[in-house]
Amino acid sequence: MSFLSRMSGIVATAALVSLAQPAAAADISGAGATFPFPIYAKWADAYKKETGIGLNYQSIGSGAGIKQILAKTVTFGATDAPMAFKDLQKNGLVQFPMVMGGIVPVINVEGVKPGELVLDGTTLANIFLGKVTKWDDAAIKKLNPNVNLPSAGINVIRRSDGSGTTFNFTDYLSKVSPEWQTKVGVNAAVEWPVGVGAKGNDGVAGNVGQTKNSIGYVEYAFAKQNKLTHTDLINKDGKRVSPTLKSFQAAAANADWANAPGFVQILTDQKGAESWPITAATFILVYGNPADKAATGDALKFFAWAFEKGDAMAEELDYIPMPNNVVQLIKATWAKDVKTN
Image (cartoon, rainbow, N blue to C red; front, side, top):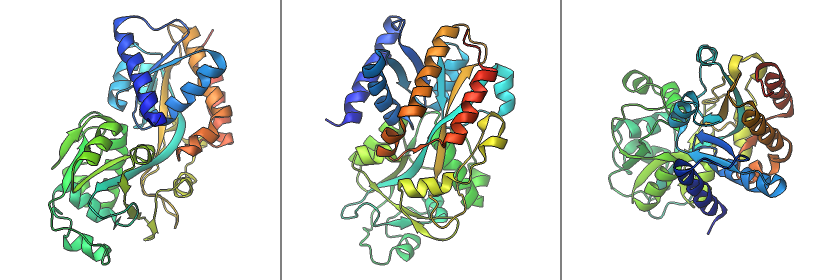
């Protein structure tokens, strides 16, 4: 059993138990994005061994995580779709990035190996628009003249829940496809033209793994953990790139965190020959003046520990740690804007 599978059971069970009884006083409670779940689970395991304090994180999607923090049923919310600065101010919330990573198209086509197939943004958008419907479509064959593609229908798998992964994926498609921008747009939940819905990155990963001739999109750690076949992509500079820590870092290098109120940054379709085109940050939401200041203080101690000791663990799962200068900006925001005593 993989680490992620083991931790999924542990954390999911903890989340279910928390519905029946209050979490232990020392537990840190959070809910939201599935995108960072693999690294949050890994950090939580190490942090509990070191401190004895557990993390009860419900991996339920960004939209549901925002609902829970607004309802004040958790100490922190987690979202991959950053909340607008005006909405942060309206709700008394403080937002900061925790880690960055890549979103990848994943496929289940017999005989095609990871990274063997390449797609460009227009073709990817047209698949999810329902315009490119077969694997041997001329647009795919033109990009992949040496790949043996079946004359089979493409089974599209997409998210059914409010998802920050979807927000970033649709943001990318809107940048590369005017038709996508006009017909579908950008949001954590959209009216999909085609496809079968699945809940969470894990749900999409599971469905793609079980469905022949399918395509979906997941955070890269889920592709690795589930041994799924990812595609390469043609980036903004017209270069073919593979999803790697290096290509994610190349895209993230353009982020100007110091001049972004609320740390709002969208990292899709970044320039640069080595940039992976669907790179994203994931964010934490806490109240500036929380009802339970001690609980929020405990959460910030966990995040501070992760910034200090969690970089290697993040890189093992191909996430990009926040740069040290950004961590200092985040800690300064905590000191100024979050009351923990």
